[in-house]
Amino acid sequence: MAVDAERVQTRSSGGQQSAAVSADPAEHRNRGRRRRRADDGRGVLGRSTPYLLLLPAIVATVGLLGYPLLKNLLLSFQNLNMRQLIQHLTEWNGVDNFREVLSSPDFWHTTLRSLVFTVANVALIMVGGTLVGLLLNKLGKRMRLLLSIGLILAWAMPIVASTTVFTWLFDSQYGVVNWFLDKLGWHSMAEYNWMSTQFTTFTVITLLIVWGSIPFVAFNMYAGLTTIPKELYEAAAMDGATARRTFSQVTFPVLKPFFLSTTFLEVIWVFKCFTQVFAINGGGPEGTTQTLPVYAYVVGISNQHYGMGAAISVLTILMLVALMAYYFRIIVKQEDEL
Image (cartoon, rainbow, N blue to C red; front, side):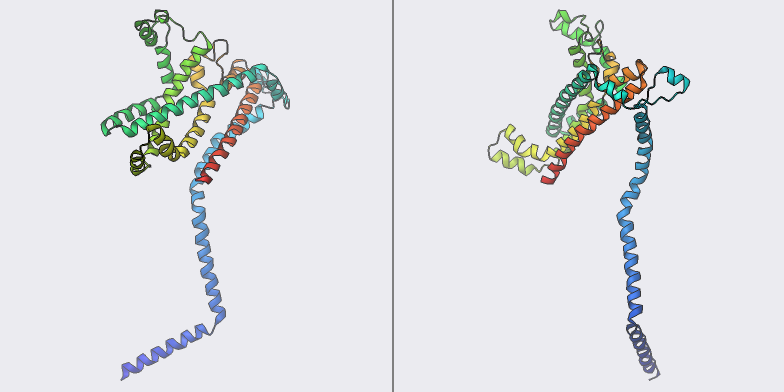
C-alpha cells in the first residue's frame, strides 16, 4: 500500500510539472526558438562545408596564378626595355604597347596561324582519341592492359623529353623516319631536312602534340563507353543497325558531354602550347611556325621588349577567354538539354 501511494504521488507530481510546463507558453516558445537556431546553425555549417574544404585550394591557386597575372598586366602598361630594367625605372606609357601590337601585321598573321594550328590539332586529337577509346572498349583484358600501359607512358613522358625524341626521329642525317622512308623507296627523303619549311615543321610539331594528347582523350572516351548499357547495342544489332548508325544513334549521344568537356580542355592546352613549338625549331624557319605564346616570348624576352611581350600575352589570354566563353555557353546549353 505504501508503494502504491508513492507511485500515485510521483504521477501526480509529474502531472503537475507537465501542467506547469504547458501552462507556461513563453518558456515553450523560447525553447522552440533555441532549437530552431541550433538547427539553422547546423544547416549553415553543412551548406558551407564544401566551400570551406575548397578554400585552401582556392587561396593557393590565387596566390600562385593571381600575382603573376596581375604583374603581367601591370607590365603591359609600361615601357620596359633593358635600360629601364637595369636602372630600375618604371615608365608608364598607357595603352601604347597594345596600340603598337594591334597595328602590327605580324601579330595578326600569328593570331590566324595560331587559330588554324589549334583547330587542326584539336580535330586530329579528338578523332584519334575517340578511335583509340573505341579500341580499348573492344579489346580483351590483356590487350587492353598492354595498350593502356603504352598510353600512360606516352602521356606521362615529360614534354622536353618527348620533344627531344621527336627531334632525333626526324633528324636529317641520323633520323629513323628518313631511314625508313628511304628503305621504302623514297630515296629523296634519305637526308631530308624536316625543319626547312613551314609545312614540314608544323607536321612534326602536330605529330608530337597529337601523340602526347591522344591518351587523355582515349581514357576519357573509354570511361564514357563503360557507362553505356550493353542492352542498347544488343537492341541496335537486332534492328540491323550498321556500325556507323550504332555509333551515331547510340554511342555518340551518350559520349556527347565527354566530347564537349574534353574538347574544351584540348582547345586550352593546344592554344597555349609553347614548349613543343619552341623546342622543335624555335618558331622557325624565319618565324613561320610561331604561335602566340612563342611570339610573345620572342618579342618580350629575345628582343628585350618586356612591355610589348606582356601586352601580347594579355591579348592572348583575352582571346582565349572569349573563345572559351562561347564554347562554355554551348556546354551549359547542352547540360540543360540533358
